Image (tube, rainbow, N blue to C red; front, side, top):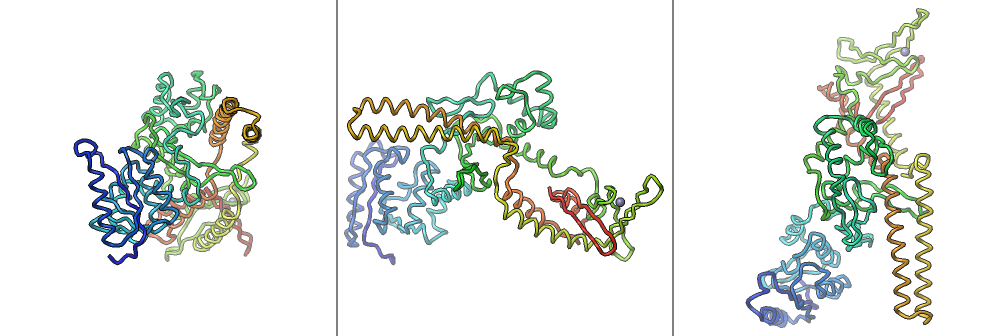
Length: 495
Ligand SMILES: [Zn+2]
């Protein structure tokens, strides 16, 4: 062994198949591992799990050991087989793996050494990564890096009032399908997927029939849209869609930073159905001109700023493509005469406009559009203030208790009352956040990422002009073009 090892933790735990039968299996392992360590002059500390259990939480020795690993107490952890460490949920596997990686602590078995920090191709690492969806692992890691893991919350419902058709049960902290609401949800899904109705058509149909929205009002298009797109129905739980910035303002968090985990609630939408919904909505949103086949890259995009008519495209027969001059006839018989321009100049102007737009998007913050959300925001602020007040009250209660003004029983009772208020407030707050979510558009980061993605696929001189025209129409709504002599302007309207 080439590793420099002095201090070692020995972790002992029965595996599931050893729980019955051999009674002294742990003792046997302990002997084996201490002998192994002694032969190498390693200093050992033993962590011995009395009973085999499913999760870290009920594996106190594992918790204690990981804490010590994180405190850099050991050069290595000695186990019989590496799966003594890796059992448990995906989330735990991530936590464990991270503890070893971030402290460069080795995992040693009698037959080999696992170096998670430095050997990316390591067997154990690949085991972890196959267990944990890559994405989920990255998100958990990111979140851990920020010291914001609320482990207990993962997999449980913490989002307030759940979307149709679910109801929240505060006892189990989970959500369940409300049998009365189930048919309505399934119907909305069917109207969209099978009857090919749009969100607007569904909204109007439900309102015509007098069906109440989840909040007891009339339906709006955004509610149907969000409902169809919700990943909660696929069994997912999404955390951290919004957070408070340093100034206490609520901001949207880019999608890649959301924490998405598998919940334990009933799934009412398959992944295939979800994919179909996303695809259909994207096509409708991004391809308003899908029916128009573009013979030129700029077909149907260049609009005359003088008269509002679309410019035709033309070629001079030598391969040079032009935006044709505008020849719309005015009522008095005169012509508009916005003059033509080489296609290439337009491409260059789009390129420049894109750079400007990138800078603009990167510089502007993702503040929520208060004009739309003002009332929700005000209500939300008020609730937050209430929450702060209750927390202060609890602090005072604690002080009073420590000063001896209350006995333990009185303290607990008073605190329980405040805790209950907090729970209700938190539900209300997240409900408001969810409501506001219905109204928010994509964040600047998301928009930028989307535009960049399409832009990278755009090759102005590609042979497949119809395809390039399609791509351009996915990022550009229209190009408002004006030419007066040498004075050319092009206003790009991004989607
Ligand atoms: Zn014109």
